[in-house]
Structures are given as C-alpha cells and as structure tokens.
Length: 216
Length: 254
Image (cartoon, rainbow over the protein chains, first blue to last red):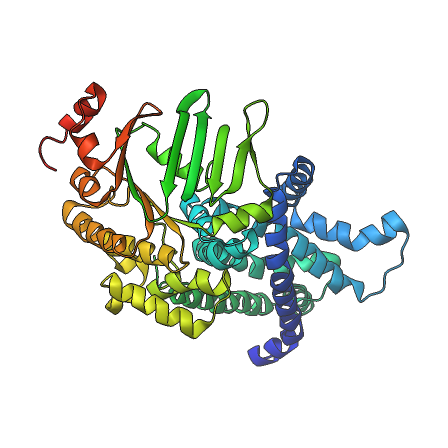
C-alpha cells in the first residue's frame, strides 16, 4: 500500500475529525460565553450550579464524559439510540466539555476589564447590553485570544478521543489500519494530519491576533 | 434656576465618613471649581453627583427633578430606572484617566454614543464630531487610536466625547492630574474655551491659577465638609486658617 493509498483510506476519518472540530467550536464558543455569565451571576444559586458544572467538566476525563453522553440515554433512560447517535454524542460531549473551559477564559477576560470602561460607558448612557456588546466584548476577545488558541489546538488533538465511543474519526481508522497491516505508516500519516491541522489553526489564529493589533 | 442641587449629602466607605452633610447647588451657566487636599471627598462628591456612587443620605436634584431624596430615616432613595436614565442625559463626566475606548478610533469614540445611545443621524453626528475635534485642535487625529495619542490629546478627545452628547452640565474630575505641566496647559486651554460656550461646569482641580481665573465660584473642601465657598477673590484671599494653610502650599504660583 502506498502512502497515498493510506491517506485516501484515512480521508473519511479526517473528515469526521474535522466535523467534530468545527461543530464543537461553533457550539462551545457561544455556549461558553453563556456559561461564563452564569458563573458571574449575582444569583447565588445559578452561580453555584454553574460552578459545579464547570468543576465536573474540568475535573473528570473527557473520555469518561463521552461515555456518559453516549451510553447515558440507554442506561439511564432506556432510550434506544441508533448508530447515528455516536457522532452526535461526540458533538455533545465535546461541546459541553469545551464550553466549560471557554467559560473560564471568557470570565478571566471580562473580569480583567478596568472599571473605568464601565463607568465611561455608563456616563455616556449605554445600556448594560450595549456596554457589553460595543465596549467590553470587543476588548475581551483581544485579551483572551492567546488562551483560546491554546484550547483550540488542544481540541484538534482531543478529537481523537471520539474513538472511545467508536466514532470512526481519523485516529480510530489509523489504528484499525495499523493493526490490520502491521505497519506504523498509518500512525505516521495520522500524526502528520494532526500536525498540519494544527499548523493551519495556529496560522489562522495568528492572523486574527494580528488583525486585532491595531490598538493596544 | 438651579441646574444641580445636592442637599445634605452623606457618604461613607466602610465606616470611613467621606462626605459629611455636603450641600452644593449649581446655577445654569455657572462655572464652579472644587479645590482641597487629597482625600477631602471632592471626587466622591462628583461621583455621587454623576451617580457612579450611591449616596448614603441626601438629595440629588437636576432641573427640579429628583434623582434621589431622603426617606424618613434619613437614607437616600433613588428614583426609578426610567427617571434616572432621563436625568442622566443632563450631565457628562471627564475622568482623570480619560477612559477612552481603546478599540475605537478617535472619531468612533466621539460618535458611538450619539449614534447608538441617542440614535441620531450619522451625517449630522459626523459633522458635529469633526467640529468638536477642530475645536480641540485634533482634526488630524480623527482616525488615530487612543494608544497613539499623548495624555493631553487623550483628555481632549474625552472632553469632545462628553460634549458630543450635548450635556447641560459637564463635570471634570481632576482632568489634568495624570498629565505633565506642558500637557496640562493644552487641556486647560480647551476647558477655558468651553467657558465661552456657556456650558455649566463643575471642576475638581489642583490647578489653583486655573480655578481662580475660570470660576464664578470656588469651593474649598477638607475632611468631607465644605470649609468655605465664594467668588475666587473671596476664597483665595480668605482669612480662614484651614483655607490659608492649604493655599499656602501652592505659594504664589497662582
């Protein structure tokens, strides 16, 4: 089997990995912001619930969370799930896990904003939501971008964990090929895939960071 | 007619009494300077007037409309949100540290609130913003970002930003305290030029010569009370011991 043939066999897995990556980001970035609001809520009960959620998401293995999301509906509720549910379970598991991490990043950014920005906004008559959307959030994004980049790069590699619930993503396919052909080459190809993927991510994030460098 | 009335204002921070029964009224068109040593409560008074701080007790009235009043137990109660929002339109505040929005250009800093808070017409706002910048001597900085400006330029932008909303009264909280003497001069010059526009101003400042020249009335505060108030001549030639000892520190530099 040539390297090209291996790659083409791996292509399906690559596509699944990319899907997990993109879907997770699309949902976890906004969800994380919502969770960070709950974490900073003045309502003690909401704050306590969200705090607990974040501590569970960050304190237990993602692999375990994926299992719970995948097997939970049947073991807990007796709902029979189809084969399609595997990928959906991966989407859900990754999203709720990454949202917790993003929430803490948003929170650090929002809380690092100087009080003067809020006071100036108030004096100029901005409503609370206007202050957040027009004044605070654009500055928060710039502040938290390096931390977000870190998480996004980890996410690329974490997508391989979906194999634990038998999602045929890149890593699962490579593993199967490696054992059937007793060859390391599929692993090398897989490693190359993750590396190049992350290279693209890093370049993309660097570009965004540069675009935001027009102010200090 | 009084534009602003503050009656019997009290404010404490953790049992430290910062304002002890302060009353202050400002007429339309009047320029009032508040001087006094650090920690005398000058800034806190402005922050209470602009509702950045809540008074513990006392009344706050703008143009006969009550923003806050005393309940029977002597504790300040504030009006409902809608009323406060309406009252808030009467005044603007220029901060010691400018607090410009760093992610917006100079022009955006000035135009954003008129556009999105007052929902005014864009062309009209733009024209007015450019006029303000011209007045501030900063036409060439319209597209610059705050990080590219000197402190003096930043403060002038902050003044323009406050003026763009057409407030009836403008508060200045030590507008030149973060600036070196040269930059101080350019900012004071701009504030002087506003005096000609008949804008009501209340200025907390350590610039004695400036306070003497520009003010209709000078208020000397110390330890949370108004020690003395009057025309600049009266206050600056006061025989009050406390006033004299404070002004004495400035020598004859004003």
